[in-house]
Image (cartoon, rainbow, N blue to C red; front, side, top):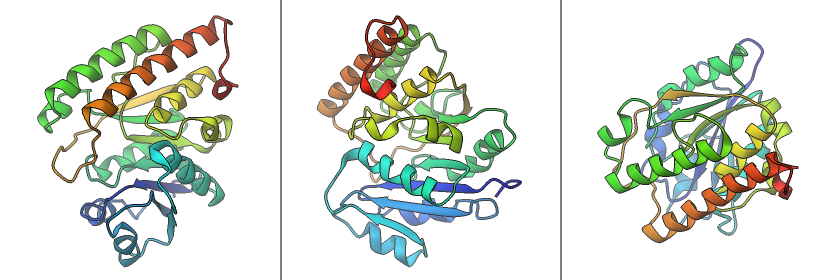
Length: 246
């Protein structure tokens, strides 16, 4: 807790048994009040590892709901627990939990209502082993999104995000896709509601156990991202308004 603001860290997990302990052990217990682990029907023993670590709030999905569906369960549970600041951290140890305090303080002190951990600010992505083709695709997509959405983020695709309760309550994230494009729909919702977003430099690690999607899924994701950006632009122009931007 920072001041009187309760901090909840949510871990959207899928086959994270090999990395969950390292991730969990670096979460700063001095300020984090609750940790929520949502397991998206993993084929490994992610749930058992979570229980052995003493994580109190473990939600098992009986069937795989997808990355977006996993996050919906995460945020719904965090709000149910009374979280004032909710931080989404991948349990694959790709992003360092040591930035949780910095992200939380920006929100707790009312500097920004949303904070993203950016792999692109600085040289963290390539230095951490991001494949060059993913880096190039990230930069092209981000440039396109910034133009279409009139924003200036360094990237839209990070898996490290912190939100105030007010942002989550104002964002109809449960109407978003259950797939990977969920993240971009949520950012579109946040910008559409007029909230500002801060970014901090985040070192990342790419290794065998870190989660990733294949080229085909990446291509589908890229097309989905561009669709969201176009929908946002058309909505701002008053031409259309997709349900998730209501």
